[in-house]
Amino acid sequence: MSEDKRRYERLPVELEVEVSAGSEHNFYTGFTQNISEGGLFIATSHLHPLGTPLEFSFTLDDHPEPISARGLVRWVREPEAQSPMPTGMGVEFESLTPTILQRVQAYIARRRETIFYDDD
Image 1 (cartoon, rainbow, N blue to C red):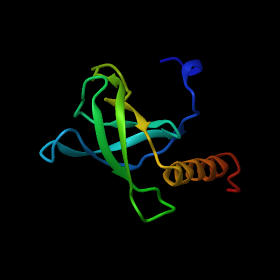
Image 2 (tube, one colour):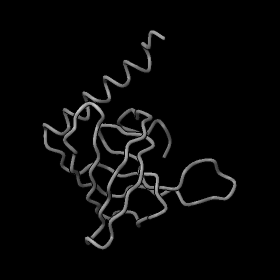
Image 3 (cartoon, rainbow, N blue to C red):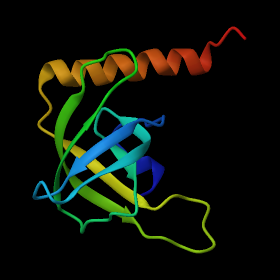
């Protein structure tokens, strides 16, 4: 997917994500590479086909309560021997509550300010 097709600007961030796909026996942990108000990239070797519904949770470092969300796999990055890019999946958020969406948006805004206006 090219940059100009993205609806939301992505924020580079690493967060632990607990993922469940279909059953409690298909549970694993991955890490985000980036997040936006539309979804996130989960770096993992546990890849799922396009369109697979996932349930996942993650914690934003400014709020201790985990965010539980649902999403759909929209793209997959397969492992490549010569690529420095991590294997994983782009997951689009599905029906976030207004409160959860506001938490994600506020987190992204605060982190973006820190990146661009760091006094150090």
